[in-house]
Length: 50
Image (tube, rainbow, N blue to C red):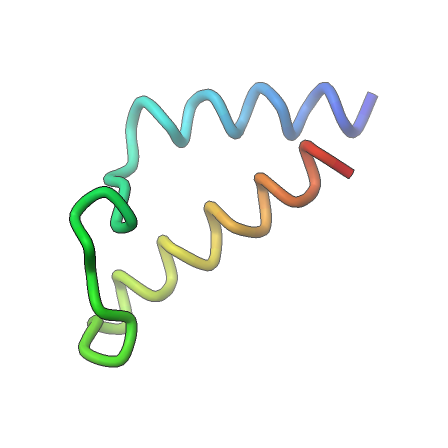
């Protein structure tokens, strides 16, 4: 159930949130908001796969 929930959230993230890896964003120069979005996407992806 939890894995399915995070899979749905991951698909929504892919559609709604920007992909910083495709934009080649340097994480050392990223703003706090960009780091928050990056961390959120990473957390959801990890939960969806695990």
